[in-house]
Length: 397
Image 1: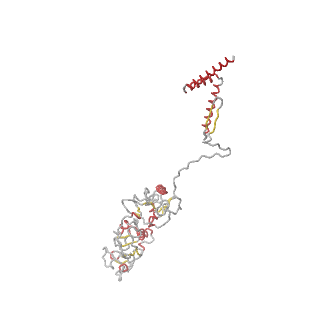
Image 2: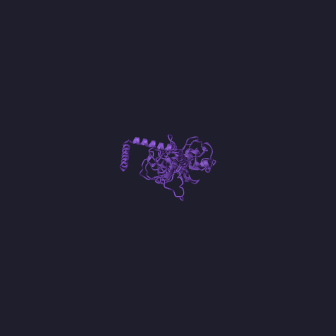
Image 3: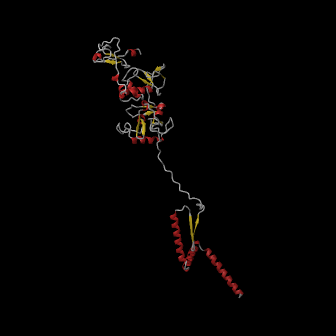
């Protein structure tokens, strides 16, 4: 009996070893197929397998739905089997937050705000940031709403045009256009003072110099007020237009201020040469003369020339207003209020030196100074004749 049972056990172990060796020799696909069929048989034979499978699938769907609605920033991994469903936290990507630590607020992106122009006092020009009231250099200082500007600062702003009538806005410059030009100059830095708001620039396309108008004038900039091809161009000291300025060796006096003129080159902003009498003047002196006399009364202070003097000033960058003189417009010094008398050594008029009549007894003033006068007949001229006369004071100069 022992021998028979021992033989039987030996045969059983031999068959098991042969089956295992046979199964190990099967290809991988055959093993997978058998494994799948084995699982299907177990699911069919188990009475609770179908209910467990449905319960697990419903749990999986509910867990996915909750994770989608809550918008958690943590990675979740779900592992399911026939009995339970577990969720674990990915500790490497999202560390566990302490229950006492506050929840961090989301970082808001920085909004891009457009640059704004700097705030300036109401009595300061919004373009050059000065309250300079030299009308002959910067023009009149005007105010409208919240805008204050010099006339010439508006003229030389390249982005501005007079789109309105002269009585609209500031001298024809509309308020919206002025504000647009101010916004353009917020990021433009002056090449001389380093401050922003420098809307005036050199008219040479290759030149990148920008400046406030007073800064440019102080540093030798050339501003052209009268040019038909281009409206109010401006140039830096390097790109000045070529002007005819002969050199001189002797010391020369400026006829306006009676100060000596430096021997400067043709790009210096302190010197201007006039062709009518070959004279030299300070530019600032001529600017004052031209502004107060106006184009209708402007003449050379040295020779009283009208034909060559005014065009020379316009080409040289001197502003010549197209109007009467300031004293005539203001009425403070009316020409009619000035009383002349005949300055002849022997006055021939029977009514006296103060009489101002017609024809031969008309009083006319000196063509150079305008302060002294004489009767036509006393000067030896005929009535209605074009005459030129200089008083005794001017003849000795």
